[in-house]
Length: 525
Ligand code: ADP
Ligand code: MG
Image (tube, rainbow, N blue to C red):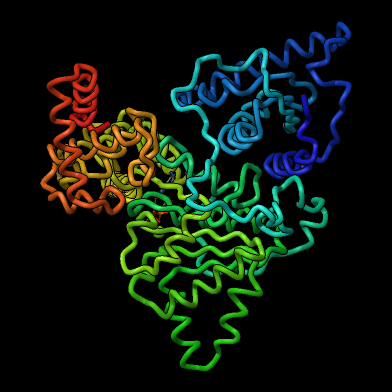
């Protein structure tokens, strides 16, 4: 068992600031996990365990779906004198639980004990008594690279910048408090990791963003976050900036939308201030965050400039994060050398969230905005608005505004009537992305696999099945489908569709897969 000692300073300090700044040090001899506890302390331990169980029950009730998933990787080791000892299967689980469950848990514990709660974590790969023993439906995934070319191996693993894991480089709390990070234009204060709901649809992008912010886990450079509109890409990029500002205020962060990059580039050219422009993006930058990179499409001169900035930063091992509404290989009018660089690190997609995640997002938003929304309304809204988180949030805010105007509670009848009146409820119209998502989920692949050049038998089969289902269900031409599947030739799609059609009649296993997938698509979620 190894204590996550280097991280403890941060864990404690974060909990402390959450918990009204109590600074009492740990008392190692009082940890509940100690088997040599005397009778008095043993009684304390039992009381601590009971308190812990009540807090767990409360927290589990709030998010039953993901609680067991994550707490199957956590063990309770004791609660004594406000010190909660937890053991996590690995750093990834620790981080997740800390971000998403500890605020609620520790608030409950504080209410019960009247003490400010400090958490002492340890990391242990083999837990004997996990808090939850239900195996998770979606096991926590660690970022895995989809690189066509690995990042240079001789690059330093972690520069003294945003890229360094917290444990390695974060200065002591007192030093951190002394440095005030400069104002960063355009950051939305609400877009933090704490406000981001994680589910299977965005798990990888979220984990990779945390790693890019230096929160541990393997760091990928660049991190390319892609997906449809309103699915949280900008939120994640802002969250990286917030986290780095909080943890390493000395880091020079440049956050810019690609559109602004273009405008500033053009203006700098006109004003003959290119030297300054270059220095800003190449020399005076430790972390570059560029939102909506697809905006560079067709802008060759700006692409060239961006290419050089990218190279300079990458060579200096400075973290680069970009977002895009398309996968790199689908970016039109983008120089090949840029497209290939975007694939050097990790391409992490965000998909439309699943029902459970949508419910959790509504709950979180309602909590944040102090809107009282019953569970059945949360569910109804989540079922009515499927594809876009921005729309989901907008629906909740509209309901709340209308209810307040009419001075009525938000209850299910009201919500139904309002949503029907605004025509929000959509028929089950799947898109290519929906089909790809369902197929990937069914075969336990990621959608990037379907678009990749990977010819591994199982991936190729899933790809063919997805193409077949798209052709069956959507009004797409073969060339359109080819483009939607990683820019493949239309003849590839034709032969895939024929192959699956033939297998459907000759192979019962294939038929079973297709029927299962059709059932899933029939109900979209
Ligand atoms: P994108 O950049 O992908 O178009 P945004 O990041 O602007 O989307 O997200 C749109 C809205 O939805 C924002 O208000 C954001 O906070 C919210 N949002 C998206 N995904 C999530 C999520 N997983 N959890 C909480 N809020 C989310
Ligand atoms: Mg955005």
